[in-house]
Structures are given as structure tokens and as C-alpha cells.
Length: 284
Image (cartoon, rainbow, N blue to C red; front, side, top):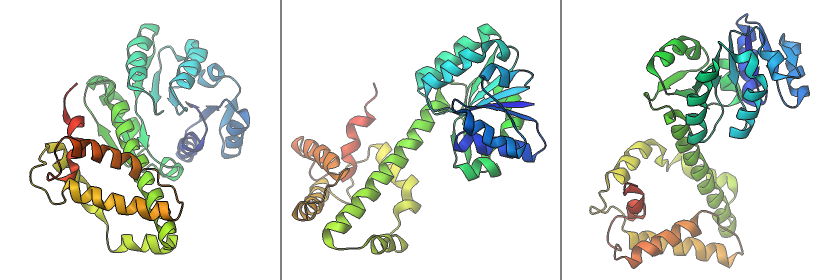
């Protein structure tokens, strides 16, 4: 039997996937109605995480944040002894380090394995799962986790690496959607309908070169400009002027423009515009 703490969109997908494979599944959620909804699929819902974990071979945690994970594990502590707890929650690196260090002393094996998945991925065992930590523990968990995901990425022995890379990936998604929002806003300002804005991506799709673009920025090679900072800043002025004229708000461009201005003031006008990342490359 397998227990799942947290039956939101991802937790419910994991639960249903396990049930389809013939596993017995216990579920717990703070909002008990979300857990009980899975009883129609064959799960048993519990109002207490300790009860849900009783008799489980392992426990999967899919909760909102560090506080929710810590509170729930503490509430179930007595029933977690001797068990593997796999935490798929997106948490802080400090939280991942603390839990990995503290729970073994209480007889609990804790492993952090956050995911890049939607609900359908969780149901179908597709998407991407990250894991890091003790190599022997990762090897033990590998065959269990590989059944839950399309790709399992092992990030080495650093126990908080999975937490760090999950936040890095989510930052990219946030930045992309900030850019999408500004594209729609600028389109609105210029009288271009959302569907027509979307059509641009059929012809101009920088996604294919994303990894190459990132590697160039990360290399710190700003001397060989393909688009100078001065010209990029000119273009952001044009964007902002169009938005201001139509009283439309941009959310990402103003912050990037401010960083461009700071770099222009430092004399970087003729360098590649990616020089705005220069300070991020300086070690702590």
C-alpha cells in the first residue's frame, strides 16, 4: 500500500495512476473532500495523515510549500518510521537540506524529488522528475520513481540540487509568461488581436535556440554583439512608448529596461545586450 499526502491536481494524478496499476492507495488532504473524491477511483481517504500512512510501504508528499510539508510530516511522524518518504513538493533549498538531515535521526528516509508535470503527466507517468541526494538512496528509489515519470533526471549527491533546479525551471516559466503578458499588452496597445499575436510564433520561434542562447549568456562573451545594448534599449523605448500612448501597462519590459539603463551608465552600450546578465555571473 502506498500513501499520498496532498491530493491537489498532481497528487490526485499520482494516486489515480497508482490505482490503475493495481496498487492500494491511501490518501490524505487538508481539505478532506479532495481526498474523498478519489474513493470513487478505489483509494481510501483519511482525515489524519498518520492514519493514511499506517501500513504504507512508502509515502509520496505533494503539498504546497515548506510549512505544509513540515507540519504534515510532523503530524504523521509516528507512522513514518522505517518508511521512504518521497517529497515532490516545490520547496526552498534550505527546507530540503533540513528535512534530509533531520528525518533519518527519527528513523525516516526522506528524498526530495520535485517535478515538472501537469495533472495529465502525473496520471500518465510522463513529464520530468528531478532527484538528488545520497547515491545509494537514489539508486534504491530509482525504479519506483521511473514508473511515475517520463524522464528521471538525477542531479548528483547535493541534497538540495533538485530543489534548486526546480526553482530555476519555474523561474524560466514565470519569465516566459511575463513576456507573453507583455506581448499581449503591446499587441493590445497597437491594435493587434491576441490570435494575431500568437501567429507570430508560427514564423518567429526563438524556443528552438533557447539552450544555445543561454549558453552564450552564461559564457560571459558580451564582446561579440549580435544586437547591441544601445539598440536593444532603443527598441524597449519604442515598446514602452506604444504602451504609454494607449495607456496599457507592461510588466516585464520596465524592469528589464531599468537594468539596461544601469548597464548603459557603466559604458556597455556597444556590447551585446545580454550584458544585462553580467552581474549575475559574478560568484558570491
